[in-house]
Length: 255
Ligand code: BG6
Image (cartoon, rainbow, N blue to C red; front, top):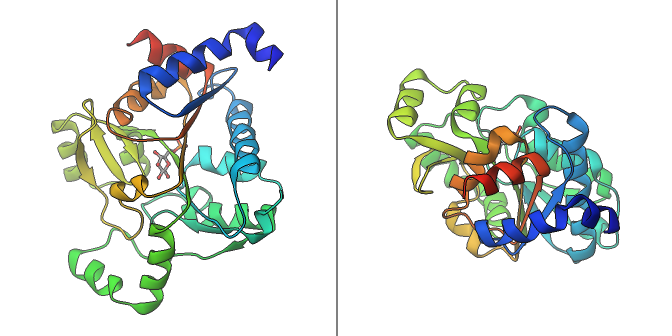
């Protein structure tokens, strides 16, 4: 805490909390665009928060992404963690296996000595298969667990970076550009005003479910994500936002 005070990070945290309307903000030093250890520091901050807040028998839903992978990397067992259930927040949305929510949920559970349930749905999903899948009892059962999660852990990305990384069809990319998509989180794409302009059709958490969760934690850093983060929080709600110094400074500059 003393070091943070000295580095001015506490001031950034207070300013971010007011600017983004989040319950609490945690800022770690550095810029995760350039250095990977910074992502790991965000991951550690997230794990220490979970340690102090998670209660037994809670369900934790996680998204994919390299930042969430860093949270999984930093995961350790803690009181109650062996009685927690880790689930992916949404079905596959085009990520590489190491960045998929399923992989990350399983890894978190392994390190926390907790339990996990996975969701295997192909993507992209056509409207008809989507409806059929929803009626599969095995899928529906896990879907209920996911949508009723106590804790939601998610990343925030830059819209076009995410769309390209997911090998999104050119036609959709053109639509995202036309609709000025700026940010992305759990398969939803948002414009500068925070309105949803596109949504990947898959099973799992819906934006509305965030209001039901006891605790929503967003983790995203790097100067390159500043606009995306600002866009997401126009409508997005978080009890805790964990970021790095470079993103924090850039967000506050753009106020
Ligand atoms: C995705 C999440 O998998 O990762 C998104 O579903 C998030 O919520 C994205 O925007 C961020 O990825 P990264 O690699 O920048 O942490």
